[in-house]
Length: 620
Image 1 (spheres, rainbow, N blue to C red):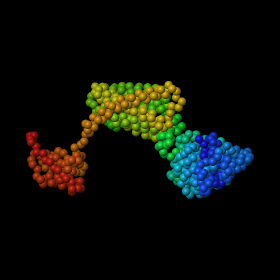
Image 2: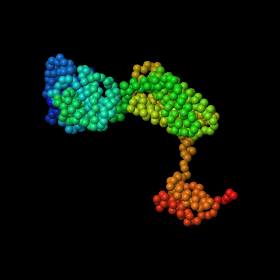
Image 3: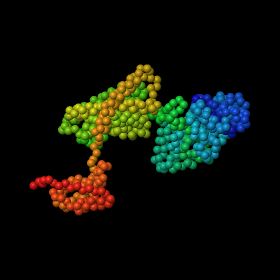
Image 4: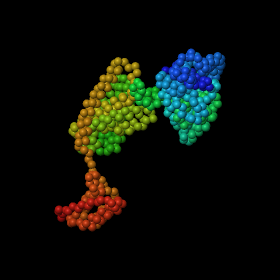
């Protein structure tokens, strides 16, 4: 992959060629300079392709002369002020580009070659059009559009990067650190924040550090950070003075015009990271649009999962306490206590560790994580059985019974929960969501329900709870493994034995998933056939109920049996009242009850039915 540069006029040579050559040198790749030339004459219009560099053309000759002239300049004694700022330009491939539209021709070359970086001068050098340049809008490669004077020559090699919560900020920082690496010159990174207050300065610095971390740039003395508050665009732009290159991301709140008005003899570069969101390409499904994990986050992920998957004293203590709390919550039929135990249980981490082991083909991590899961499984069963054995009473609660009838929907929940947990662990900013994943999956409560049910000799419920746990285990591991591979975690240089272990393990888990799906699907169908409990009626408001009771209590031996709004759509009544009385009631009494309901509900159109049950006997 090479650097592709476009020059459309002699005025652009001094702007485009030096920086294109410098980017090519720091990335140790080739440079191709396309010199656009087109004439409307019939002879010239035939040329719609690319001619070799020997073609006689004034722009090609001008580029060659510029490169030759720059090579004759003697180097400076001060390395920070060296003028050898177009290194290896003599090796550049210079080609003539004949096409009616230079931008369209450049886009065609980008599609054909997929360059490492595409560089061109902005069509509107005033910067007023901001980011409307067609190369920025349509290029599928990393793109840099340059603004500034064609006679400016870098003297200090200093680069200024303006950031403002733009998706291309990280790429701008990456390019800035790359282009300054040979001279070890300074990079000043400035952030524009909408907030005010001293506390936001530190927050802004942390945001810059996170950007550097995401792109794999380590902190250095030559990289300085500064935060500008209250959208101080002018202050930030003024700080770019005495820099050779100013870089901003495409679609940033900062614009090229902001800097062109405040800096002199400097180049302003608008950068865009490729590619745009495109699912399909000529070669099939694209994957480079997917979210990939950064090098720093990958290292933290491996470290945290390795430590979290080890069978340690802390793991056993926390799991034992979580199992005790979950068992007591299940026996008390308390959802709040059960949810609390889910947050304490560390059983999710070794399961995600198994997923990472499959993605990495790491047998050692896989064995450690699996051992932790097995020991955790046994410990939770023992603790829950002991709690159930020493607790008075043998009554099964709804919290225990509900975990004894899993269905296919539980499998899907576990699969997506495993994927969500893996994604959140790979993204430091999302680690707070792992608690929600733990609640959604519920690993410890099913095991505790299994232990309690075995002590109470309810083996059908115990079997269902065990099935739920196995379902969660298989789905979480597979979901995590798929997510990690999706994010770019791979086996690397795995040998044949490691790859075979991955294939076998994934095969076993896949077969288990299929086998589990059959009983879980039948359980779901049974639930559908049985149907869900529906209330016959919905209660009236407290105000309506109190008004009715207050009126009815004035009549001796009259009792309100039921009142409510019918839940069935086939019942035409809006409100139904059922009373019991030893003697018949008059129609006027029923009319008064209807009037009370309509008045309290503020709707005179309500259809209210009053039923009176005649008591067949009376207790003496």
